Image 1 (tube, rainbow, N blue to C red):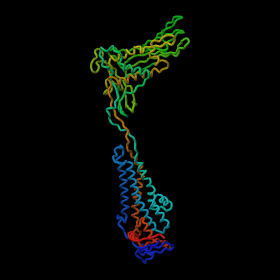
Image 2: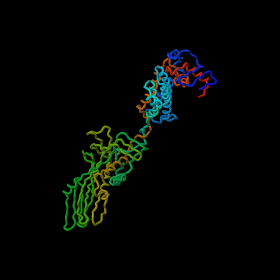
Image 3: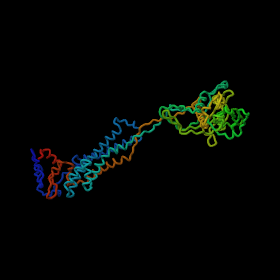
Image 4: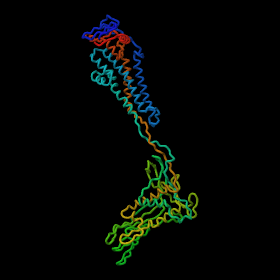
Length: 568
């Protein structure tokens, strides 16, 4: 290189370089003397810009930035994302802060690696190529990887590792934040479903001849025909009802009585005419069948009896019977109509009560976590709640638990009028019906189409009882159970274990900076990563030394500012 317009003459590098340091203070000292420290370095204050001030500032800056990130994590932990009111999104803020933190860490780390380069050569004779390895390590991850394999591990190795691993600082910090959908529960008076302690349409004696409750009649037929109906509830989205609710209802108990009934049947036979048989089930319900050779045979019949609604002294009304039903079913061959596969079933419909626990709704779906039948007391008969009905009073029960009345038990009641109306309906031709397979008319097929064949009668009558129960819950005596609205909201979850990496990177960078400052010797110039410092040195090949007559960085910069050079 040749200089122009400057008093500094910088020669080109040759095997035995000679430098005319015209711009520097000359010295007659030999290299050994210079290397021994007689050329003193101008000491800079540690906190000055020429010293370690910027590196200390960047280290503490990175520490503050990391602390800010941790503060944000602590503030947003287990909070709804909607609580973040800053115009910039949470993830964007974390990304910005981690990028700034990474840059601050790398400023002090790269400077420390550069200064350790001079310390490395000051302690012993080193390969000149090590200068290149340190320089590349201070510039980025690729150089740091090469440094780890090219150099024996030393203090600068920490800097190389920090340079490599700091690439994961931002991704690791992002992994700390996890956005999770959680249910937020708020009380909502609009979230309701029905339950009832009573079944009483508040009719007086003059209404005793009225037909059954049309709603109850519809519920009975829906249950028998297994028609599903939309659950009655109100909920704007997703709701839940914690706790349990007692409600009046019905239950059905069915028993196969085929063997007993056939054993005690009474049949009349007129030769060669038809034959009729009379049967009585264990429940006391009468059935009759008819058989005519080549004419027909009874394949279905259902008969019913109403419960005993008379008030008796010291009587127990527990599991009060509403109606009894007996069903005869058989199969007849098409030639002689001989019967086979006879099945006779007794079913009894009782009053009951149920405990409904932890209801939940979502859209059009509604269900209970558990439905449990509860025990009732022996019951009593007296004036209905809300006044008398003339000669029609009510039956009343308490809920039992472990043989004693439940504390705060509700009073369940059914009016005598409603029981009689139900009894009338079960005695109607809607239920009392038969089907004769063969040649002839069947004027009243009734329920033969839904209960005939191999239908599961226990299930059919239980479905009827539950349909009646649902009607009572949502009928004229309905009360409202209010619940909570459940909304899905995004919450911020903090996974602290992902923060171990960023904290380790920050601490490693901070330790490296501190150790570099402490390790720096007075006779080693504070040149850091300056390229001008390298140009100010000469290679003494004979003594294997790197020498510089000027070690003051400010003086080197001043000379460089007044020098114009060209690459030769």
